[in-house]
Image (cartoon, rainbow, N blue to C red; front, side):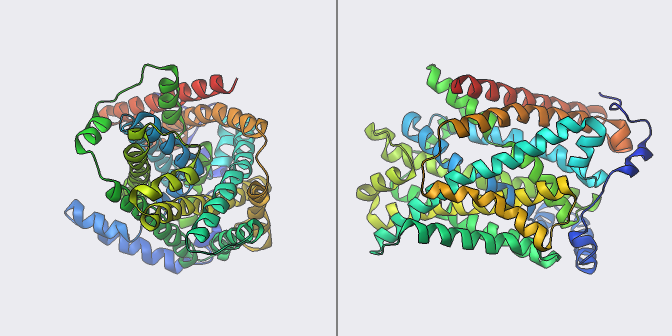
Length: 460
């Protein structure tokens, strides 16, 4: 257990930190208080299923995380795993996300207890260079990872239009994606509790559509139940160098460095407090873990059924959609699969914009509404050039390298804060619970570190 961090002495020293976001707390205080009152009633329910039913209607930040992590990268990883290894690696994504949920639960615990802004905490409690490196990493990643969202999103949109007999130039499709993304993202900065809830529900429904599309494709291709159970519970690791690289890479990259910044700020923006602890844990499970596992598993199994079984290797999502068409029908295969991929890209595109708003608002100390917020979100849309030009090979390599270095550092920082009495005071987890929590946090750090090392070596 870590007693305190450098520069800390008393629990009361936390008061100098910037706490809370006035986005909702000052501009829509009454709505927030009504939610807290409702939550207290839900928390008082004697049975967990009664509480869960109430939590479902209040969940939100977890859907934002799912929208970010389920993007072009997740689609590519799931397609590769299914087409090359069949059902064998189904266990990897659930384990990776479970470790992410453990870390995010700790991050959420710190946030609800202190309500301090994490960038400010990193700057004042750890070191300004760590905060700056973290923020710049997240900002750069949000711009660069927007490139594949526009690239793949535009490609699948054109493919969908082709299926129904329509045609549109790349420029029109890319601008349409930009318009949809901007409209949804800017609703976050309207400064009301209702607007943020509408934003989160929009992402929620888009993600549910995505999962439904992939499920329909899987139902059409069929499920090998015995192989599925083996895939989830045998924890098979291929002996080939390629297989080991895939496993460690997926374990280390299911949760990106962007999410370590995004998650606590979405909690702050909702005005969540100590009363939200139960809701926070439910939200991470129901809104982040389950959608991610379902979506990636459905894609992996569909590719295993149609590609791996025939020894076919594909380059990407468009190739998968075309490969599915003769096997499961043009509409149910190519169209529905492409709609699911489009939902993946669009939700991630929206959230990358939001992240730019969060990072720049912290660095330059403006609030999340008005012209400053809207201008900051548009920085991510430099990535629209990805719809027209192939991303230079060296660009994602450089950004990935910095991100992979920052990820275990960010995890380690939150681990230290989780055990700091000077920061959390009496809310530091002690005894058996604290030991168990620290064990899994250390495992998460080691796994992320190993995944980062493997991916960095593969880039050399």
